[in-house]
Image 1: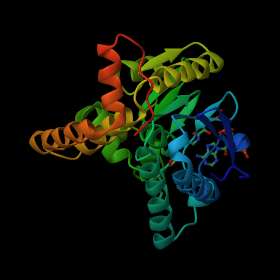
Image 2: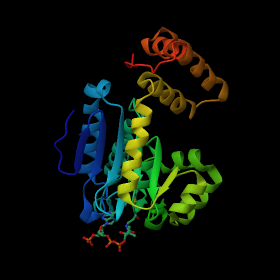
Image 3: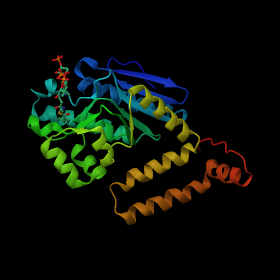
Image 4: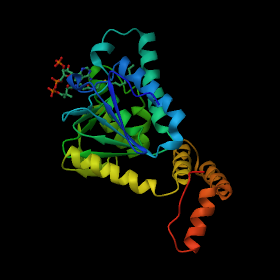
Length: 264
Ligand code: CO8
């Protein structure tokens, strides 16, 4: 796992990671450097996934999670450069989505444009009272480019997403909670991070293999018909009968003791 980056801070605490986007002066805006470093970091995780059980993603400082893609850098991009930039940003969102362990986005302050899109590629979003979400791209003569036209609609429903994308308006924490974009609200960043760790620790007590496979099944189902999704579920469900963790989990239940999972 690579950990040395200019725009990212990576901390490991046992089997959990905290990834902080660290461009506080620009409200953690995503320029090419941040995106390339994110891609490198997320790709490098493949070597150590077996030892990891979860990750928190957050932004440096008190003001923003990520205030969007870097508008200064985008302002004079050519069509080809913009296509490469959007493709790189989308690749990063896929890498987040496909990590074989849970990822919680901890949003404090602004999560606009590409910031809202990065948060949506996590498994779920925790936010503080100060969080502000939005897809303001149309105000810049743009549209969401890192997945916002697709993931927001799937998360909160197409018509609600359309209203947010067409107006470019801000969505404060309470509304985001009502919409299901945010799953829990906190009064401070410290409390949010602490609770996100508690959630990941709770998840870590379950079979890492079962958590990872349930993530894969739910993500796959997002793009499939119910029938296809249920087919995937039945396949994954039955495959687990060949795993150590399933044998250990069911045996521990019968023997009335806590299971000791291995993740295989
Ligand atoms: N890009 C670059 N710099 C930014 C960005 C950004 N998205 N957001 C803030 N900054 C910079 C400001 O320029 C400022 O820098 P400086 O101090 O050098 O002037 C610094 O961060 C602090 O910002 P403000 O002074 O503006 O702080 P305020 O508290 O007054 O305002 C806001 C905070 C409301 C968040 C305001 O900064 C703002 O509106 N930012 C832009 C938000 C936005 O529109 N985001 C969406 C961007 S588009 C996008 O994300 C598209 C994604 C897909 C792209 C695919 C492309 C091909």
